[in-house]
Image (cartoon, rainbow, N blue to C red; front, top):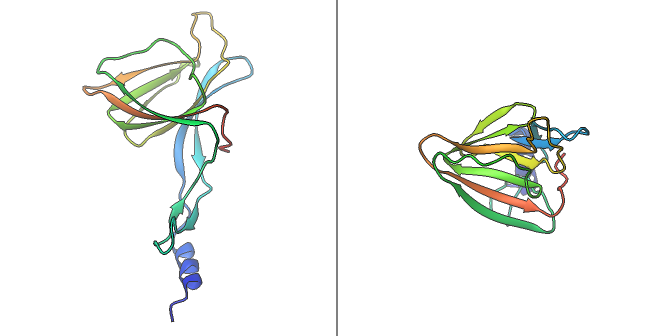
Length: 155
């Protein structure tokens, strides 16, 4: 006899909960932007809509979210700036880079995730504030942005 609860437990044991890595752009107490690797780890194996088969679901709930798409042309480099709001940035195609005030430059492509939370940076001796970003390579960078009024709980 097929017991859905027994099947669920077997699946849980056979498949470890996934993690998704992303780049977290943040501001320290001195107003300098940095970026470091973080992980989303709180996945639950569940059916998204029973009787659909279980899948790993990780949800970040936050009121006041805005979803945008942006296309950065080939050769585009912005100016130093802060993320306008806390936001997830997910490249859909092409490549782009983010350089923070501490000198770290990270290049990302499709599926690599970044979280921008470098609001309230302080200009350094060169006048840099926040981060610099631009395209890499021979094609535009198409990005999906999910912006929040307030920083969601992601840790």
